[in-house]
Length: 160
Image 1: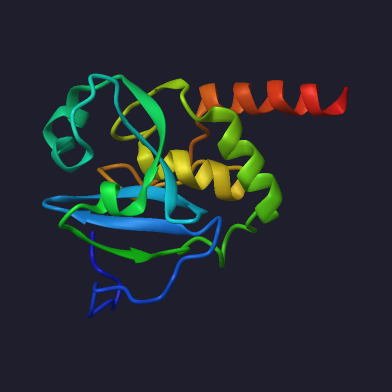
Image 2: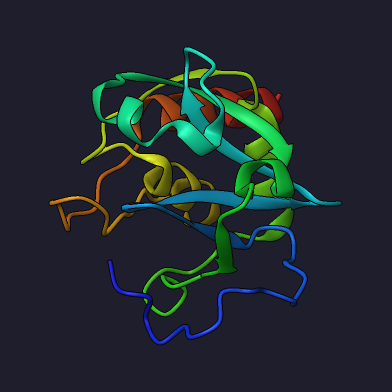
């Protein structure tokens, strides 16, 4: 994936809650969503491999764990940037709703598929209400079914 005109990846701007964070790993990008106070939400393979070493493992994984971690732990020695690239085509949900949806899924195990249900799909589902990803070989929009089901459960609880 191209860097979309980003020449310097040494990011000195503080992200805001709800921002998408693109982490540049060797050979691929990992995605997280900024929660605030230095924390992000992201998914990682269930076997507990440190996030900096998950690229090869994620190709074969079918399950992931939703984690809340410090941004600096997720990024490690890699470069990152704030990249809300879908804002022109998708309306971001209100930040309060993004935070509530995120809080609801922390610690949950979710289905994972590199092409149709990856880390970018996960964070865009939280930000926009629709899982979108240009990663891999697939340029289609798909919903992350398991997260949607949990979101529906959450909404039902909130309506009571």
